[in-house]
Amino acid sequence: MNKAKWFLAVIVLAVVGFWASKAIIKKSPNESLASVGKVAEDTYWTCPMHPQVHQDHPGECPICHMKLVKVTKKIEQKQAAEKRASIAATDIQLILAGTQKYEVEVMTLRARIPVSGRILSQSQVAFQIYEKDLRYVRSGLAFKGEGNIYNEEEISGVITSVDSIVDPTSRTVRVIGTIRKGPGGLLPETSFRGEIELVLRDRVAIPESAVLHSGRGDLVYFVDEKNTLIAKRVELGLKSEGFYEVVKGLSPKDVISSGPNFLIDSEAKIRGAND
Image 1: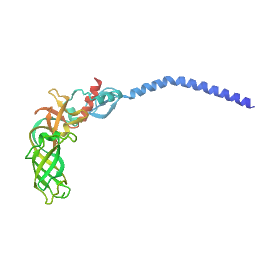
Image 2 (image 1 turned 135 degrees about the horizontal axis):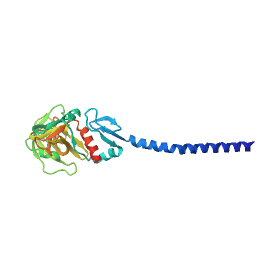
Image 3 (image 1 turned 120 degrees about the vertical axis):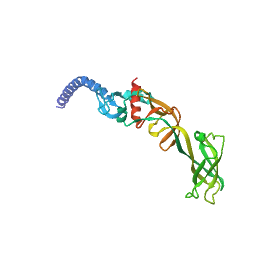
Image 4 (image 1 turned 90 degrees about the vertical axis):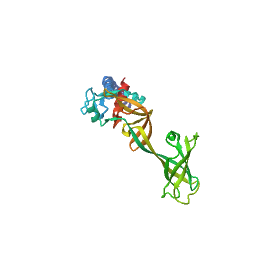
């Protein structure tokens, strides 16, 4: 009886194995098709100005009518290289994207450089500035701040000297200021924190909203006479009340895009990756 049961079990296993192998063989073509479908799902067309738009075929954006751009995972990975293509866009398309043209102008900027240091005496304070700010600092500029002991009372005065040696560790330069107004009883070696006040006249300036801070530097989108947007590197100075001083890269009367430029930048990188 045990032998009969064992023989029956062998027969059942054999039959199950046979039908299972047939199912696997039959399933292989379908699995292949499923694999193709998965690859297709990794490719779609989108509008970088309106990334919520996704289509499985080429066409135009239903919102701004800009030509849709093909995107694949491979392209998304290539975007890390930050290769950007130029983009042609009409004024209407720029408005629909939330951006606008801005003509670069010369302005007077009011800026502040934060500083920290120590009280030297009742009449003197020493603080550090970073070497990148050295171009702005000179004797005669006003400063104001507070100490740790009488932090409810302002300490103010003027800069009287700027060292000519940069600390190699902190990349800062020491500045000495003469205190003209402050509380009595200031103690030497106590902490000071404050700011230097600056008035920068006749400076090329652009709105903060026009600047994209990328991993390789700051850039803007320059608009040429054909309404083509081109990524352009700029060197920025101080920031003041929503504007950046432009040290290098733009001239007065240049036209740039101002607004959510990350949308334009997204399309430029996608197109650059496709090139």
